[in-house]
Length: 285
Ligand SMILES: O=P(O)(O)OC[C@H](O)CO
Ligand SMILES: [Mg+2]
Figure 1 (cartoon, helix red, strand yellow):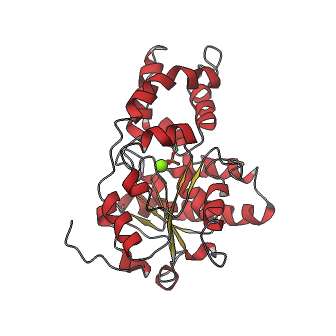
Figure 2 (cartoon, helix red, strand yellow):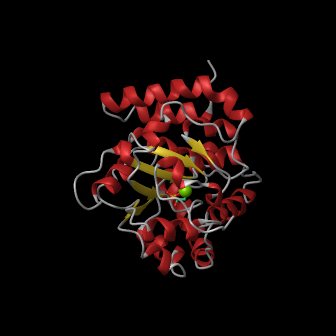
Figure 3 (cartoon, helix red, strand yellow):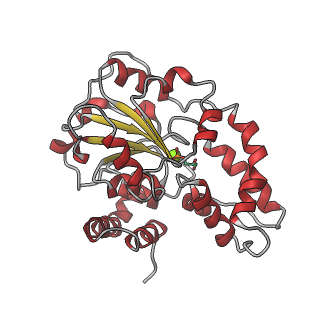
C-alpha cells in the first residue's frame, strides 16, 4: 500500500497519541483515502464530518500565524533553498509540506533526514546556520491578504480570538514587530515553546491549550474554528476535535486539502456567516 504524505503524518501521530485520539485520527485518515479524488478536483470541498448545523455552533476562533496571518513561510523556504544548494540539492514543496507548521527543532530534523544530509549537518547546526538570515527577514514580515480585515471584524463583533503558532517567543517578537495593532486584538497567544505544548503540530496540544485559555466556561472543541495553512496544522486541529478552514499556498499539493472542513484561496474569501459568525458588513473583496 502506498501512503499519501498526509496519511504518513497520521501514522506518525498515531504512534504518540492516546488510544482515544488515535481512533479519532485513524478515522480522519480513512476520510482522506476516500476524499482524495474529489479534493484534487475541487479546492473548495467540504469535509462531510462537519455538517452545516455544526458549523453554526462556532463561538471561538484560533488563528495560526506563519503563512496564515503573516506572509513568513517564504522566508523559511528561501533560507532552506540556500542551505540545500550548498549540498547541490533542491528544496521542493513535498519537503516544505512536511516541515511547515512544526516547532523549529522538529522541522529541522525532517529537513536534514529527508534530504539525506544529516551526516554533514545536524538539525541543531541547521537551526544555527539559518538563524541570522531569518532574523533579518522576519523584521520585514507582511500581513497576508484579508488577515487584518478578518481579525478586526471578529474582534469588533465580540468573537473571542487567539493565536496558536509553532513559532517560539524570540521569533514571534521579530515577526510581529510591525503588527502590534493586529496581535493586540488577540485574547491570548500560544507559542511552540509554551510548556503546555509538549509536541508540535500535528499533535493537538497547541490548539487544546489555546482553547483552555479563553475566558469563562471551558470551550468545547466543536465550538472552535481554526484557520491554518499547513498540513500538520490542519491535522492538529482535527486531532483536537475542532473545525478547520485551510488557506493553503497554491504550490501545496491539493491532496492535503481533503482533511480540512473548508478550503479557501485567501482569507478574503472566508464567509463568517457560513459558520454562524457575524457577517461582514463592509464591501472589501
Ligand atoms: O505556522 P505556524 O504559525 O504554526 O508556525 C510554524 C513555523 O514557525 C513555521 O512553519
Ligand atoms: Mg502556518
